[in-house]
Length: 347
Image (cartoon, rainbow, N blue to C red):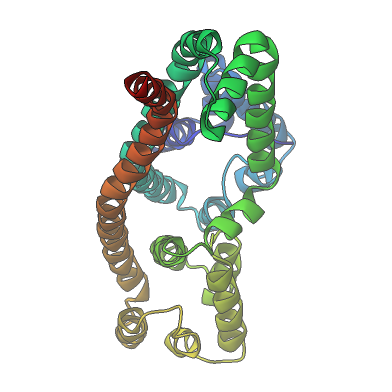
């Protein structure tokens, strides 16, 4: 059963569940109360959860059957909490985990906002030129019977097509957008893996994965889940294929009796020396889960700095590219006019 929840819906669900558990309200009664107030996906989730719990299933088992609602890490944190009787504390930790994830995503989106705005402005300006400017200029050129450059002819052809076949044009655009959305929906993992291999993006993606890895590992270890099992839950949640493979290698090493820090050291190309050294210190002091949480904060800050650097470099580059494109379009319009003026001057 597929139930996709937004991050805000996930946070509301976990927060409400934690409040009811902390208040001593019976689980089934709390779910029925929330179901009456919920809408759309959250209501479907609660209805599904109520049915499963009524039949004697656990919350974790029920959530596991709702593909897309919560990731493997959260589901297994809840499973461990149900077994150990620490559901209230674990739901509180999950709530903070989701909050931090939302803040992390918000920082990434904020960093990408400027390039998106610039691209949006370019599309808007180009649309105005195609629909309003080119048709009028084309009429003037047709009357004067000027010999037009190929770029001008291409613009006039495109403008003529979109103005005479507006419905078809927007249908094609909508279809392309639909294909992109469908591809993202059904092939999200492959798309993210491809994007994560692009120059400049690969390093950023690995840092994001390291932040998510250390945060999730800290939570899972804090819940009493063994290291090997924790890595197994985490590895499929990573974006970067190289990090997934490195984690699989580390899991095998730890399963054979090795230490986590030594396992990281075997893939030192992807796990930085700081992570390896602090993991070793955490193992020695018995505070590995605390070390992982602290490392997560460091990696998160590093991602923010890297994003700022990338956007700082992108801003002037995008302005130059957009300026070049708009300038080329305007030159295609103005060049024939200068050609006409020049021919009049010769006469």
